Length: 281
Length: 280
Image 1: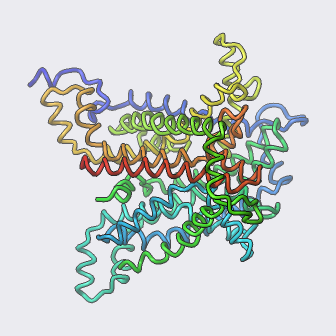
Image 2: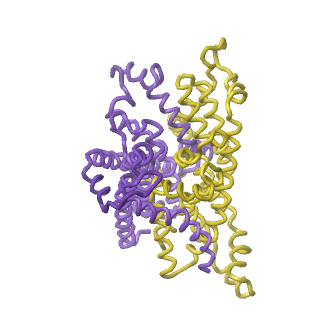
Image 3: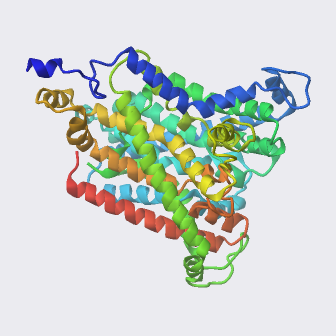
C-alpha cells in the first residue's frame, strides 16, 4: 500500500500533483495555439504602405475609422446578431423545454425532425429562401439575414436549452402545477427563471454563429450600406491584399466583440450537455 | 405542453423545411436562378454521380471531415485532460484556448493566409530555414489540402475540448481513485476508465463534428477558394459554385442532397449503435 502511494506520479490524471509545472506547459501550448491570433494583433500595428511611419503604430486604427465604413459594418453586424440572438432564444427556450420534459412518439419525431433539418447545408436553403424573401422584400435586408441566422442556429439552440432544463428537477414544476399553475406558467415562472446560465449559453452560441457567418451575408446583402463586418472586411481585404496593417486593424475590430462577450460571460457557457438532447435519454 | 414547441416548429417549417422541399423540386429541374426550368427527372443526380470532379470533391470532403473529426478530437481531448486538475491560471487558459473557435473565420483565414502564403512570413521562412526550399503552402495542391485540414483542426479543437471537458467532469473522482489504489497506471486508467466513461460524449461529438465539417463552406472557401486546381474543392464548395458561379441550382442542390443523405445515414447508424451499446 505504501509503495503504491509513494510511487512517483507524473500522471496526467492526477489532480493533486498539478502545479506550477502544469501552468508552464499549458502556457506554452496556449501560446502555440494562439499564434495565428497574435499574428492578427501584431500585423494590425504595422504602418500602412506608402506612409512615413516606421515601427509599430496605432495609426492604422485612426485610418480605418476615418476612411472606411467600418463603423457602419459594425452597427449592421451588431443589429443582425442581436436580433438573431433574441429570436433564437425566444423560440428555442420553449422548444427545448418540450424536448427536455416531453416523452412519446411526437417528441421523438420532433427531435428527429430537428436533427435531419440541421444536417442540411445552408447552400440548400439559400436559393429557395432568396426567392421567398424576394417576394416579401427581405432580400438585401438585415432582418432577412437575421431570420436565416435563427434558422441555422435554432437546432443546436434547442438542444442546449433542453440540456440545461434537464438539470432542473421536474418536481419543482410539479409542485407549481399542483398549486394551480399552468404548464406555460410553470415553464416561465419556475423553469425559465432558474435557467439564466442555460439562456445565456444559448444566446452566446446564437450570437457567435450570427456574428461569424460569411455565406449568408455574401449571398443576401447586396448594397454597400447593408454590409456586415465579414463582407465589409473581405471586400476591404480583396482591395488591399498587401496592405496588412489596416486590414488586420479591421480584423481586430471584428474579433473584439465576440471575444469580449466570451471573456465576460464564459462561466455561463456550456455546450457539453447537448449530447443528451441529441442522442435521447 | 407540446404547444410550447409551436414557435420553433413554425419557424423551422417556414425557413428550414419549406426550402428543403423547394430545393428538392429544383433538384429534378434544369432551371437557373430565376426560373424552375424543365422537369429532367434524376438527370442532375446522374450528372453529379458521373462527374469526376464530384468524386474528387467527395474524396476531399471525406479527408477534410476525418481530419476535422479525429484531429480536433485528439487535440481537444488532450487539452481537456491537461486542463482537468486545478493549477494556477487554469481558468484563464481555459478561455484563451477557446479563442480559435470564437474568432470569426473571416479573420482567422486572413491570418492563416498571411502565415502560410505571404513571401517572407513565418511558415515559408521557417520551411526554407529547415532546408525544405520554397514550400507553397497554398499554391501546391497537396500542401493546400494539408494546410486546409490543419486549419480546420485548429478551428474545431475548442469545440471538442468543451465537449470532452464536460464529459470528464462527469467521471466520479472515486472511480479513478479506486483504480489508482488498485495499482492502475495512467495509461490503464485512460484506457479502461476515462475512455469508456466518456465514450458517449465522444461519439456524439464525432457525429456533430462530422456534420459541421461536411457542411463547412467558409473554412475552405476563405482560405483557398477550393483551389489550386480544385484540390481543396469539397462537395459543399462544389455545390456553392454550381449554384452561384455556373448558375445550375438543380445540379448544386443534387450534390448537396447526395451529401446530406450520406451524412444522415451515417449519423443515424452511429446513434443507433450508441443506443444499442447503452453507453453511459
